[in-house]
Image (cartoon, rainbow, N blue to C red; front, side, top):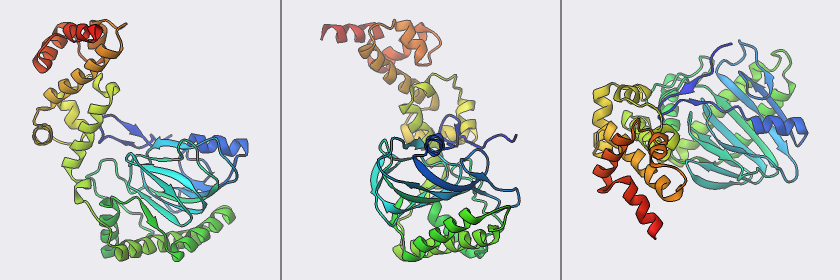
Amino acid sequence: MAKSPVFKEQGKTYHADRCKPLTEAVERGDVVMGALVRKDYPGRPLRRSDVPGVLSVGFWDAVGNQKWGLDWHRNEGIELTLLETGAMPFAVDGKEYLLKPGSLTITRPWQPHRVGNPNIGPGRLHWLILDVEIRQPHQTWEWPRWLVLTQEDLRELTRLLSHNERPVWPATPAIIACFQRIARAVRTNERGSAISILSAYINELFVLVLELLRQQKAVLNPGLTTSRRTAEMFLNELRGSAEMQAELWTLEEMARRCGMGITHFGNLCKQITNMTPIEYLNYCRVETACSLLRDAPQCSITDVAFSCGFRSSQYFATVFRRLKGCPPRELRGLRLES
């Protein structure tokens, strides 16, 4: 079995989500789903020659209150979804939305998003996930050859989708009708019988999305696909994840995780944080240690040091004193006195 693609730009390695809660909901009979898929996405498998690059295309129908949702997850492809009926909580990069009938969502490859809060609502949702071979934000998108858009249109579509910061759009009637036709093709496909028409509809969908983004004059951020963006994502994730901080990081490993040379990564880290990568790592670890010293009095200082990624309590104390102006034991004493 081929290894599942991973995304290595955000500090630690991410594997694409496979929508296990949806699979379980279908098995329980809570939702009706039709999908054609690759890998271990839920649905009926596509043949190797059927629309290469399509990871999942389909729809679900949820009736009544649901007791499941898709928590924060990432897909390795560009994902387009349409809510045809109902209402549904949706979030991207920490920002909350309420989808209504006709809401079109666009999430970039590997962009974290959530469906439900925590549960989805009743409604009919359509989706398409298409792999464009992105494993790092600054890589070049590779579209499947069966897409018939001109190279000029594909370049513009890539620019609009990869630089787009608006995740929710009002779908046009033509986009809604196209998703409905795609759903019919998914339902009726038997041994490739509807693949030609499915590929035609997916081509139409991307043409319609390109027209929508042109007409709506999408606000773009080219910085989303730069090496600086890659470094920022890694550094932000590092600061917010105690699990990442506890890893055995070296400068070489940090740069490798970001797909960069050591010098380039070090220069970007200095520009973004005004610290070297190792200084920034120690800063993040000490901030986490401060929280543990205050909130977990049952943990010894040595345990705190090791849990935050320091390999000796002596080095931890040295770094802590340099950054906080006092030894860790003193900070814990201040907490106890208060």
